[in-house]
Image (cartoon, rainbow, N blue to C red; front, top):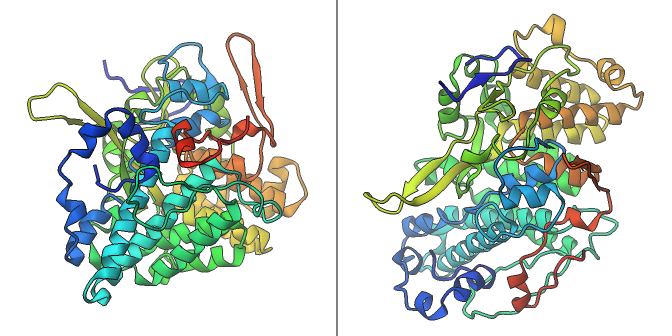
Length: 495
């Protein structure tokens, strides 16, 4: 029998040398002498041409996934009472510090980000020291934007969301801009405001240098559309809304968002789960602006975990919506309670040709066209460009509602106000945007960042009768900085 079943309530079709002191600590703890005796990878030591620097920059993206821990912390999941136990999932759902340092954990993501940052710093040093630095302009641009991205993700997972009134005092994360030449270098967390200033500096310096012609498969690198998409996210989080709209409008030539979106209610609607798995995180899907590989068990665990999408949350997230129509997202299940949307499949890489062990990976879309649309709509909400918000939301709905018909499913401001029972224009628009995003990015971990930005409380209930609440000011909303980082002088997040 196939593992893919249709839900009863929906009609569905079937190692670098210089990797950073933070990343290095874990490796050193397991055998300092052995590690330091390894012959340096020539990918990192021979950077004598732009092509070789580009090869190094293939490692400039965090090879770790935040999905498991962020999804479990969010309001997308419930306690099914049965299912696989996995510490990054269980601890996050119970709002405990995650007691794991392996894939899908905060420590693994922290390490992967600083490993990626180390690669960007090595690349930038090579660009600066080249006989003719002008030949390395594209590589310099990618390195700067990639460095900005890794730090941006770190600060939004391990520090408070940006708030202009408190950012100058809120502890941030170390912003590393030079290759590390010592093991126990000391660092300062500084502030969220400082990290945002440095991210913006790198982003703005790198953006003009990005070129799609520099790579055979641009979606594995910061191409121009991906870099602009990152800019829309950065300025949305910073609440500089005019810049969000400006960068969104320039993400695609002729501002053609519509033809770069994922075709859920046409192309995807006729696909089997296996076909969707093959396409969703593929470089051939034009909606994927930037994708990266990540060692992760998410591909095999999604839907099977105890603390996961259940029927009640499925009905809440992709049930009734403001259009009056039905979301086209296909929900399948392995067993009676193991619900999932076919998105990220596992790629298992054996240790050798004849090996029976290896490393599971998933390909993760880091930026998509749909996020650009959502970021622009949210920014236009605060700029009082309500007609532009409604236009973007209707464009999104036209790609996501089953048997979409504009005369039936087109939404207006009054539709949003009536659906949520609120008169405030901004509130009605934001509620709609966040609900549309919640459905779109189900089981991808993105919901957590919206909950953080808007300080939305999260309530989790257990089968044992506990009610666990994560209030807006709860200190547990920040993932804990790895204890190993304290050897570099960093203070942990308070508990």
